[in-house]
Image (cartoon, rainbow, N blue to C red):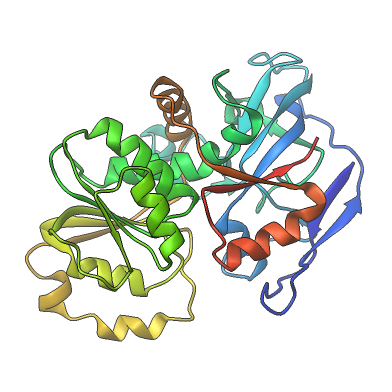
Length: 342
């Protein structure tokens, strides 16, 4: 099969082609696995973190990609959950131990044996992939393959962020950054919290205009002050400046949720601007989001189908994966980026 493969840590800015097209043997499903012919695979900022070494794969070469949609074409001898021809999705959670305290309490996202698709095991920048049947999800008919791909991570992690935000209807919600995840959070928030106002902070005017187009009450620059204090804020950026700036807009007792696997270090010095009485006092909270659970992905797919949430997507060919990653790095955003594989 053909796959776009990462062979070493690389700087996107210095090397615009970190992935190499390679021919490798087709994978064979294990006893409890399914073999999936990949149709589409979303492009996520976490791939930049893998390529640039903030959360690198433990071994090389590695096939990246964890927003995978495809068709089951073979099943292992003990796999019974899906049959040939079924359309399935695969997300960031590739496996967890299933027996530790975290897994048994439904918090498999922080299991010490958590393995990530496209980092700890080969992902979807390829024609075929395999997964244990318990970590695949039926895709609702409402979505095309391209529309479904971003839902598996950008949507699911946004859903988890919203669950952790302590948001209530009638309160004000802030979103910092407005890419693949945030635009889906805005869409589901308008349904879940119809009496709330949503304020968006983004670096460029294109993203701000897109946010207003989708129903934001206000959209401004990352460093702007919101017209009203915000009870919950979700940060979806790779930077530190939006975190500090968001805290100035947070209402007392409010919660800031940071939705990122890793933060880039280039503006780490901005943390020196953190002032306790301005940014943290009056019982403000900061909470991080770690990975996703199977519950997050499964529930969000059903919610998105029920309330007709469809992401805005821009498609690329598999051979254009490097260009998609560069565009993502350069913040050329309007929704999610998706590779068309088969």
